[in-house]
Length: 290
Image (cartoon, rainbow, N blue to C red; front, top):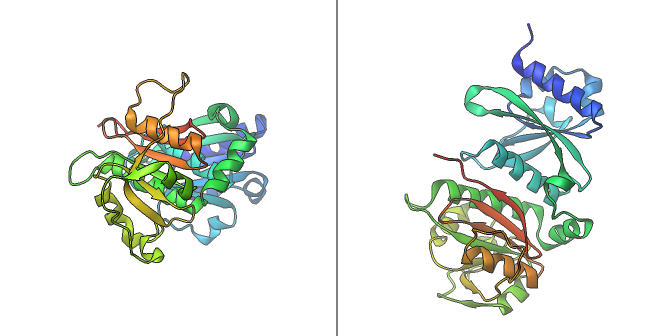
């Protein structure tokens, strides 16, 4: 008898062919079952495997699948999928017109239990070709990925058992600095750029520590942190702005409306993580209900 995972991955492949979806997004641990698929199947469809941060792929899988990582924190099913798709768009793996079959499951159950059809352009209505070009131009994919991971970890874990809220502003740093003011002494001033780059793993705890202070982090497109504790002076005035979001989100959206920056916001009250670009909401990743 076939395993549940084998039946599910075969069903996902069949559905992808039937609806002419070019990509199968594997958001469940089906590596063993994927390896058992016929060679022609593995080559005929683009497979993307969603893995935990820093997880390496076995060589037998690496030649057939692309990898997108998610942070090592508790995420909702849809939160995991949203992170993967957002990262896929920024990294260029996914495009506006892509249609995706997503295979998903709850890790503690140990098997895939759901298949989703996702039309990227409809799921993320903000997406246009100009938007995708703008976001790729604004920030390097590795930097976006690293900051999104840190934001999700802060949202899930807080800092020293306390909830925290903060803003990360990525890209167009010169204009962002013109439209903001320093609220505290810049804790990153005077350090070599390599020592204050978001891609430096030794810096992660420092960033989480400074996330508890008021104001935003301003980060260059290549990951160098310019400052923390920055007050963003641009507020967004729009009837289309989602209700229920506070001043931190309004400031974060506003700065992206006046600059080419991308902002990632951690909500102190809800634990949700929200990404803004061009004054509009790109994606919200909800914190799991405890």
